Image (cartoon, one colour):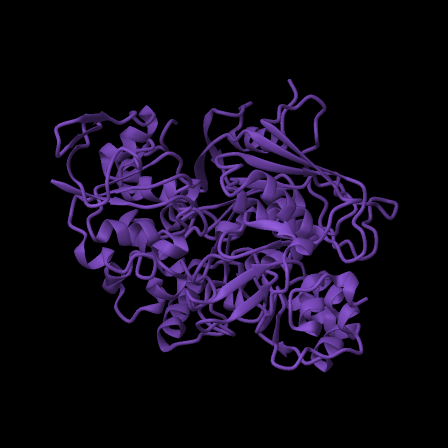
Length: 423
Length: 164
């Protein structure tokens, strides 16, 4: 019987065929933890579980990305505790300040691979669906158990299929597809389920990550793009597609006749730029229906849209232009690789010349802790994934979510703007 | 008696504990008890009593994986959470911490501030006017985790995962 991608991956990890609705204990391929929750994960592992060692130091990845570099004495001290623990454990995949956000980093490093089960202490661990892995976010106790035992449990999810047809028009991109799906599914539309994103074989890995990370915003357990990549011949990826470096021994494939609990169709040929208005991610409308919304801050960054592709899209619009007077534009690259690439081809110079301020690769102000938090009464156009009240600082700030293209157009005019209006 | 605290729908973890009040941001981690709903409902942390119950709308706990959100609720003694649907990471975190969660929509049946008697074993609420509300029992494999007091004591007792 045909299986969804999640059923295939979890069956392999469970060592037996499992179907949606079953509860299964599975072997995990990779456990990711970041600086924000590592102190509690380590405490639970050592003090509550009594586990001195992680199950496999080559399959536990630790990333300092949430407050990177440290903003306070407390965070500095706690990050040092994590560094010492990493050394004691002999953990090989450790990525410190400046390397970037866990999700793109583990893909760039080739640590996250198609078909893997990856659990992370970050809700946006659905990101690993960008390479066709089953990535899922969990809290400290679940991650401590997984790190100590190499196993976890799942209720095998039903799958919601988002099927795209056509191609994006200029100024429209993966973020608009993801927000359009959230508009349809709402914040709980895929709770306990997985999302599969079909019809997006033309997207780069990091563009796929935009879709995968936003899957949690409709409640999903995993958000998977089939690991099919446009091929330059001989199994090598087309230039710029950024395939994971090592070919995986096994990859899940879309099987004809797999069961989907719901299908959402999105026609990319007619899709308009989407904007999520405060303070819920599913509060989405076409940008053209929004009216005039002046902004104080434009923030380009995060695991959702802080990739090289996003900086390049913004630079194409901002080239030879200036950020509007009275508007601050922050650029916080998702990773060092993204920053390097943007440095090498002039993308970064274009953004800086336009007036953008640059932050250290990492999560930035997405969790409201540092590097550009918002004050009361401020309005921000954010390329991230959450516009919850208080998310980026003051609960009296307003956050609108949109693509990097909309961010760049908005930076030029000072109010939320359709990219076509400035091109 | 337990006081009922009514919350709306799509309550996210940034509303339960904003990221700025994460344990790693605090000088003293025990101070986390001061911050549940610090901005969303500032009177909550100071007046909630042990055993009080949260009765919420759809999709309670959506958003971040931060276990310190349900941990903060446990620190102030929240005895149970009742909502028609829980976001999955929050649900797992609450299960792991041993906070009973019941799937039911009681936001129209109960009032904010109402005093009720909560019987966890029988899954029964008796209100101040004497009416009885039966809560649907969670699946057996989850009940055994709650019975053990959370996933860590469960795993230490049984050496296996729930449902295994």
